[in-house]
Image (cartoon, rainbow, N blue to C red):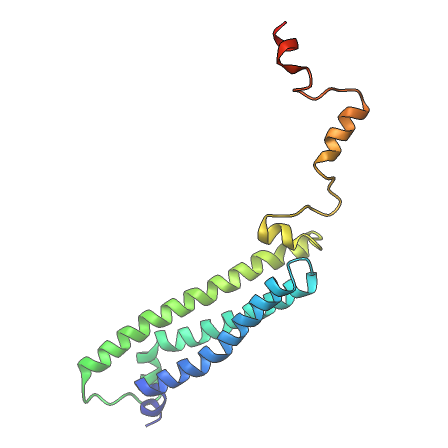
Length: 169
């Protein structure tokens, strides 16, 4: 009876809707944190990482339940076998969807750890923008023109300052 009420197709649909709502809100919050506040604030990057990590845990948990629907239903007393072909089709669909959610949740966890683990090894404070977007300068790095100013102060001419006629003559 418990398996019938928790693992039938309408209960799975209701759980999917209940899980999709907070995941969607969390995804919107991550987008607001990263693109609204910018990649320059260390605290917003870590808050977004914690939200993504929480979303990954939810996806992994629900994915495992969906993937193992036949096993869970057997554990809870079994589903009625009035239409075994239909139940087999639902089991196959739940297996594929659960596996997709499991992989998506694991990828989210892996990506969060790829950002957080280097922070524990080396000080990555204020370089999230460079790592995540590929734009900007690293803290303490000289501007690009500093090298040219240094060459001019030492009297080294630019490569094209001789002009084409002097190079040929």
